[in-house]
Length: 102
Image 1 (cartoon, rainbow, N blue to C red):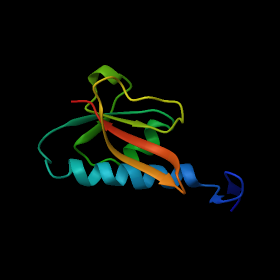
Image 2 (cartoon, rainbow, N blue to C red):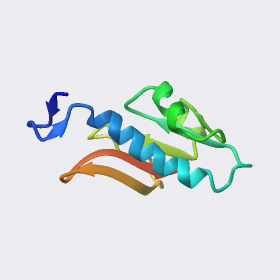
Image 3 (cartoon, rainbow, N blue to C red):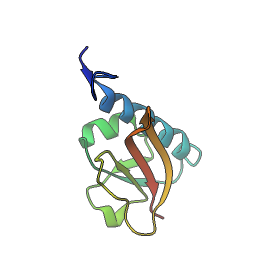
């Protein structure tokens, strides 16, 4: 496997951050299995997101309809009023953020 981020991280760090971050969200949303949650994801495809999300969570492309926002782009900011729930980072380098919108 290749090395990224000046040779210090495995080349699949984005995939690993999705697994770790969405795993956190999966555990959180699984506590209320009767409720449907909507999750907006930036930075990777809905296929990746839906693979890791629980059955009671659906991916949506409309941020304004979302309960949660998952972002991977370094300059991406969470929407106003969002509260940061979880961050995946390696050696101080942020790779993924999860914010609750409502």
